[in-house]
Length: 446
Image 1 (cartoon, rainbow, N blue to C red):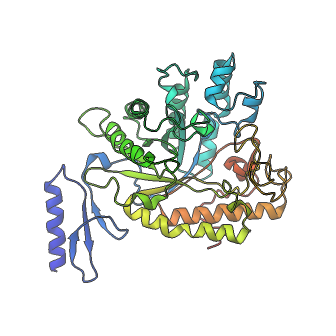
Image 2 (spheres, helix red, strand yellow):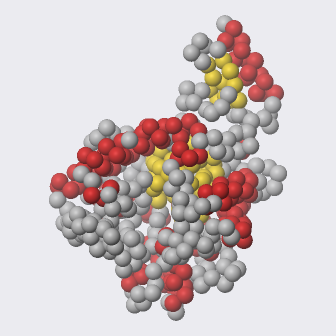
Image 3 (cartoon, rainbow, N blue to C red):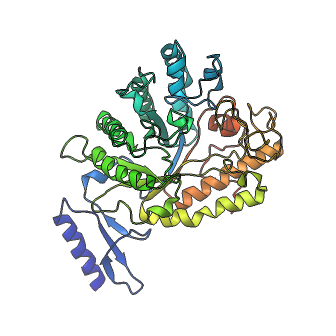
């Protein structure tokens, strides 16, 4: 009875503190109630802060989503023809697309208009998914330093995409996928080569300003539940990079949270683990100073010369081992596996960059031959064997089960890849590899 009295007193204290931080009520092994952090799964959370009121309850509802990759940030492997049709081998990313292609603007506008349409959002909802993640580059907002990126009507298409998502009941994560100078040197950042975003305060401010602009743009759009501050900063490839990025996370968080002045926005603010693993962020950006923060991690099994040579059992056991780290991270910050795939080879054309080979067939520098890269592994899927499809299905079922049970959920990469069916969610549904009954666990390894 005393415990219930204590509970009531804590509730009343919370009600009296309208602007207070969340009250976490926890019972220890003896039934004693106390207030403490970090939050555990069993806790009762009384949260009266308006800034933690997105239109999706990330405490109780699981994310099942897909990325709209290759649309508003073009990637050579997702749309090889867009790049090959330029007839110029120097065109390897959006930066060089704008730099070397004379009619880049009209080509990209045609791509934005046709690659993704309203019907795609209808299909995504019909697959049983509830979220989409839409990448956008900073150059959709400004190219003040004279970069050759095409800045046209990307934002109009982003607004259309958000409207279509809302129409079909989908929630939207908007992800800043490319920062000035590039945060990782990958072609998916817009500029392949050096990661010159680091240690450049001007570039960091420009990235933050793009996030603020996104927050202002969709402040009255309940379908947009999260602004992700930056995709995949490569913080492990040089001293000081993580510190630089961590300072950015905190600064940009407040930019998004107070994008409209003194009234806080309702967004979940997304950060990325920077390839350090989610365990590196234990105790980072905690209440009461930071509210509704979600950490994103990306899990792939083909970008490592050792892992790509694993047996099926080894690969699946390795994926199953992520349960513990994800569950621990979920107690610290909401955690989402924001990119993953059932694919286990890097055979998709241009996956490692336009004109770059694959580790799986030994054509990537320093790699070892594991097997052929042909239509039996990628392409449109028409040449796949029943055995190959069965293994891809097990990769899909096992991963979604791990990520959904151990974290806030998952967002597969990517919705559409015309020449890489092993990565294309929509094509995998057509091939029967991916189920639309996501409540059925399927063929789970662990």
